[in-house]
Image (cartoon, rainbow, N blue to C red; front, side, top):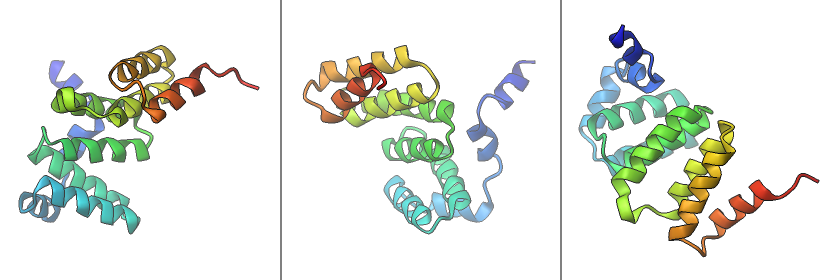
Amino acid sequence: MRAQAQTISTGRHIRAMQIPPSVKTLAERSTPTEIRMDIQKLLQQEQLELAQALGDAGLSLHPKSDEMLGICALLAMSRSDWQESLELLIELQEVQGEQAPATTFWLIARCLRCMGDDDGAASALESGLFRFPNSPELQAELTMMVKPEA
């Protein structure tokens, strides 16, 4: 029963087992920076499935790379897979540690809002504003959340 829960935990684990060999070989020969740049090129060419496969391969090879975690979180956001994006962003924030930029907090808050967790989003924004009190993106997001609908 426990194995079944792990199998369905996230789509990325299932996708990682389905990476085409050619994509895996490309990822194995590349640095995280090169993989991220290739993913960006694929997205510009609207090759979303290939970009996702390369992201999955890169993440399986470099699970603690801030570049891989960041680009894969953005890929998940582009698919509206808020849960996966949130998981990746939290991992990214852990990897970044004290160096986590305001953007990481903002993206976490965005995911939480899209998941309907306004309290969690507000908490993420407050944490970010504690570290970055002059961040326009964090301030704007918090203002948007508390601004009454007109």
